[in-house]
Length: 377
Ligand SMILES: *Cc1c(COP(=O)(O)O)cnc(C)c1O
Figure 1 (cartoon, rainbow, N blue to C red):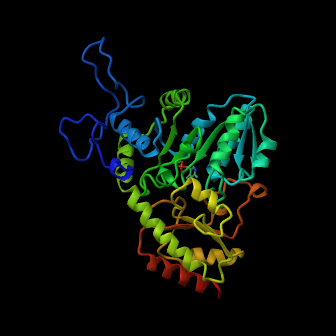
Figure 2 (cartoon, rainbow, N blue to C red):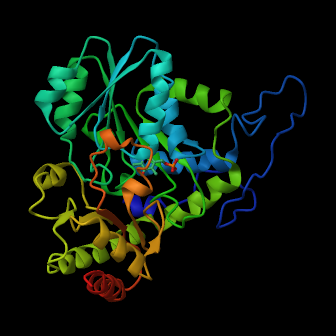
Figure 3 (tube, rainbow, N blue to C red):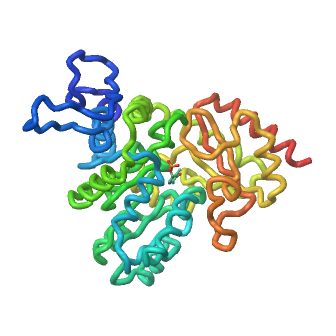
């Protein structure tokens, strides 16, 4: 069975005597025992909830991973990964990362954990930076928003040789288009707020792994820190997952049409999108992914013009986040990546990020066209 079919199957996922075609929401904090010796699967929703468990199973089917854990946001997922580190450890992270990840990395200094920010697309740089106490390598591919592409099989092999874990933040494409565990990554994390939820109505995070020892630690942290995703939010995420394949397909089709239009606009000096044949990571990307997604970045090389474009559109909402059914536009240095200090910022201040939704592509193109035309004057 294909994953798109599996996404819609409920059989065996939840015990429901009513056989409802939409699964029940177990909106409860505690579960009663019938006597003191009874060992229930469920006793308290922080530790386990049937609705959340069902969605975790669904996510592991989608990811083709042994384990999947749902937490209350993408940054929580990243935080739990950092909780696996000990004082004295060293980690390597990509130099183009989500701003919230950058902010979390700032907490590691207090724990005596050192961080090297490097261009993880350059294997020689990684080899030079890797130390005997390097515990993990954390990357995004494509990175957000510059769409740098990491060679996953090569990097995972290198990580294994050095007894280091490879962690991939796969939020930009979702497991529908890319499954890093199949290319040797040890852990994959998601901001499920983006493509998995897709409707901009829940924040959530996911951690996937095939490694039992890691899974046990994550499960322990999910329970003991009380960061598991609540039942209703899990249910909304489940609802979003059912349409993931068709949403992503429609969004990518629109994105490709928009990119084609943008290439004809002389005002747009650079387009960052891994689906462009001229992208330096295009071949590597194609060898490890089945799609390019619906997020791209464009640069006019002029801050004033970029701001006028962003302020001049009306269908694209000026909002952070991506992967939503409707289109968003943003200036990363002022919004999603604001936490990165100016001296460490790789992103040009004139860079515009677009997240393309499922509206009619021609309407979106017309919206951008009029905004670009009026930005000139
Ligand atoms: C949004 C985002 C996160 C953080 O996720 P939240 O759900 O907002 O906490 C992490 N990584 C990437 C790549 C993101 O885009």
